[in-house]
Image 1 (cartoon, one colour):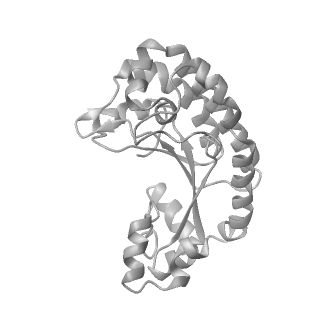
Image 2: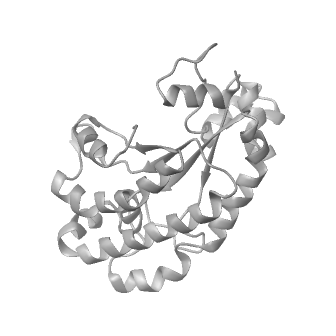
Length: 250
């Protein structure tokens, strides 16, 4: 069986004929590569030198599992002052930063990457996931952790505006991507739980997150893409919320 066949079988609750997929969900971080290099990692397998994850996957005996993404925060946007901080505080700030958000170039880069992988994806040699900023994750990235929590009560219109703009950006990305290549799965980056459970309650989820899933998930599923949410923490409590929104995995 080809790697993509195995992966699709597992997503559809089928048992592959030979073995399970062997994938790395998130590619290694810089300090890991530095450690491995000191232990003899050959240069051809160091994707930071080659710009290509393929040799690295093959060196470790993994199936090739690539992520495609169009980042809605462009490189011209300011960096947060520290981890967990935001890059704006108000609707006026959002207006001023709109020129560096939702960049057309991110969608162009997404499609260029898809064209490079298309032939091998069709042959079944590679697995492809699409990665989308989610509707809890993205406003937090802009506002910072603490201000995001206050914004549910103090600036609800701003949160809705951000997520309406984000949905439009994701649709533009899908308009460009799907004629080239249909990913095997999509993951919404959310990280909306911690070690004790959800960071928001069901009412806030239904008001600020669910409406935007409902604008995208049907399109993804009609295209044959399995829809996942990515979250840290104790996720048991949010499973019914996700199921209500036709999310298929976590």
